[in-house]
Length: 302
Length: 190
Picture (spheres, rainbow over the protein chains, first blue to last red):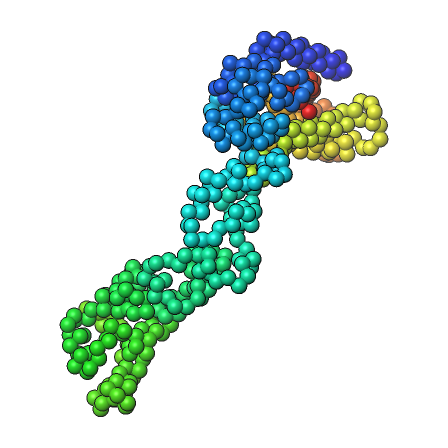
């Protein structure tokens, strides 16, 4: 068995020698972990690689395309490369990821010298993302952003002290917000503007039968008023006539007198017509009250 | 025949577990962006496979003479299985250069031949010995025993040739690993 072992070692060594000789002529198919980008396809391995060393940055600048001070086409790219002059190119760039491979890796901000301000490179992004000029955005980017991901912004509202929301934020101009008189914190928190913490269920549950646009119920331009009659029309003018007969003009506020139960929760008043017609109400209405009041039922709808 | 089918199933299951675990680990390392994991897994896998040769040294009473052969064989089996998983993680889905591909092919073939030895040959040999002992206890003559186990003896003898495949592949693998490591360091540096 010993002899056999040595025999096969010899065969293996011969195979390796064959590959070695082949590799001297055609190194890429034997050793390349992946095709280089198109721009590098005409280069020989030795143009960039040095034996038993990582690809030195000098190899990149040796090739005519990447002369220091002239790297990149866009001014911002040229500027960035000037800021990291002398750093190892491979910290940000790579190759062998295919002819169309992405040769630029995520940029590490630790490469920058201390004292370089964010806006020296990111002024365009800053302007684009902070269009709302009424908001008092800080130029201290680190107070909201990190260097890993621009969109992972977070602002510590505890820092603003006693300022009110409106000192920095412009209030929305829609009906809902212009009509609102309470503080922002009643419906929003500082973690995120959306979703609002406003709980519509507190006033009326928007169950599957009530998934309609806001102005379907709030059709008078204010969210403080609503009507059910845009859907629960009953018999049209009959409702109006019957209510007007009793001197009720604001009959759109159905829940003031009628009740409805959604998902086991009751909304509105079950004391139908109590107090109607002045203190105590008239006898006819009192008679109706004895019947226990009247709530909306499915069969109320026409 | 039943024995071979049962053990072949165990062999296929082992290969499946090795490959699937390697894919899972490789994806996890990529997902968490562990830097230079290909280099580290390459070195670690090679070290594990080299350590597994302790069994061969012990068998030939070279370097190691202490410890039971059973224990050394156990370590040989587990080190090669874990080493193979790590090497598959090192490879990932990169199949471009010929040298690493050839090295991987030899490693995989060596692994399969090793599993064949464990699951098929050793099982058949163990069963043959057990049957012979049982038949002798029943008072059968040696000739009768040999006649009764003739079919299993032929199977066992045929399977014993697996080492004739295993050892050449181990030799070629050893040379290819060295060649691959040197060429990778030549172009990639330390």
